[in-house]
Image 1: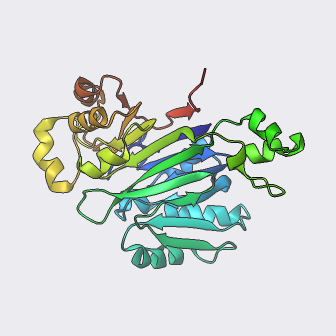
Image 2: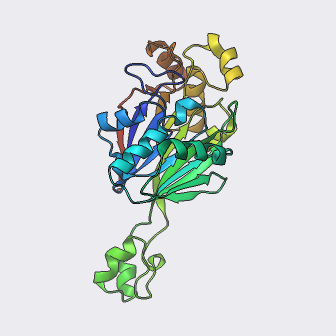
Image 3: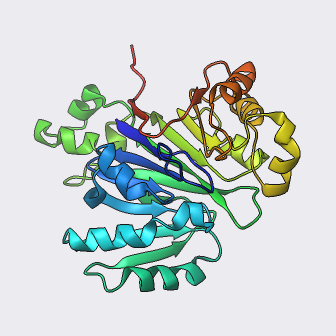
Length: 298
C-alpha cells in the first residue's frame, strides 16, 4: 500500500489555502517528496506527513514556485537531528541550483546527494522512479513512481524443491536464502501500483506514455478555460480540458488536477471542462489524500 498526499496545488503565487507545488508519496515508512514550493513545510505538518521520514526529493524544474521551500526544509531537517542522507533529484541544470540551495540552508549534519535525472529508472526506497521529459519553457521532467508486486507464492513448488517452511516468507519477499531463489517459488510479476506526476507541461506524448494505465495521474491544469489556450502554449502549461483529454487517452484510473493559476479562484468550471473528456477527474486541493493498494485477486 502507498499513500499519496497533495501538499500544494498552486502555481507561481501561493494563496491562503493553496500552497505551491508539492506532492508526497509514502510507502514502507518513508516518503518521496515531489517538488518543494513555498508552504511545503507548513503543509507537511498540517496534513500529517513526517518531514523526518523523507528520503528523496524529486524536482521537476527550477522555477521558484517548485523549489523555494527546499532550503528551509533542509534547515528544519537539521534541527530535527537528522543524520541519514537525503537524495535530491532534478533535470539538467541541477548543479547550478544545488550550490545556492546549500548556501541558503547552511551547514547540515547529514549528506545531501544531488543527482541529475537521466532516462534510466532508479530506486527510491521500495519505489522505482522513472523520469520522463516534459514540455515547458525550461528543462523539466515528470516522474512515474512504481511500487512493484512480486508474483504469487506457490507452496507446491516450494515443497517440491525441498525448501524449509521457515524460509518461505523471505523468498516471498524477494530474497535469495541458503541457495534458494525467489524464481523457484514465485509466479510472474503481478500488476503493481503507479503514480505519475507531471507539472509544468504542455500535453505531450511523453506524458501520455508515462501515464499509461496509471493508478493516479497528478497533472498540470494551470488554466481553467480554453480561452487561455494561447497563454498555455506560450508558457508551457495545460488547460483543464487538455489534461482531461490526455488522461482519457492514457487510460489512467484516477486523475487529479493541480498547479492552478492564482487567477483560478473557482475550481468548478475547470473541473467540468476536464470531466467532459475524463468523467472521473478530480480537482486537486491541498491536503487531498489517497491510499492505494494492490488489486484484489480471486
